[in-house]
Length: 114
Image 1 (tube, one colour):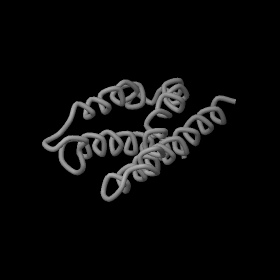
Image 2 (image 1 turned 60 degrees about the horizontal axis):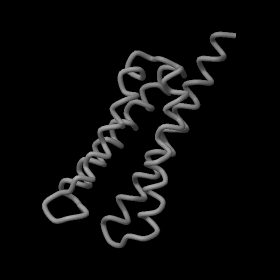
Image 3 (image 1 turned 90 degrees about the horizontal axis):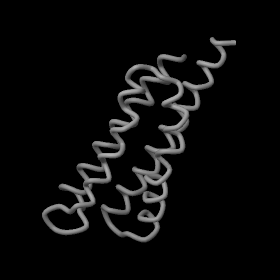
């Protein structure tokens, strides 16, 4: 269970990074041709090395770290229209999935440590 949850956590984080890049560079950028909003994907790289090493502490703080992306997804899903609205909902969904898997990974680590 622990390794499955960790792998899903990593996959969802990579999917969130890919979504942010594709969204702001190609699919529905704020400005035609891309925008500086693509830089929002860079901070998502911060927890990646720790998660790749299987660090439980990284998963714990990453749970709070991804909340701004959830907030952006909810706000833009509410206020945008068209493809941007769909991408925003997907962003929020990826964050929720990331959090569920990260919680499962942290809990599984606690059970093996006890």
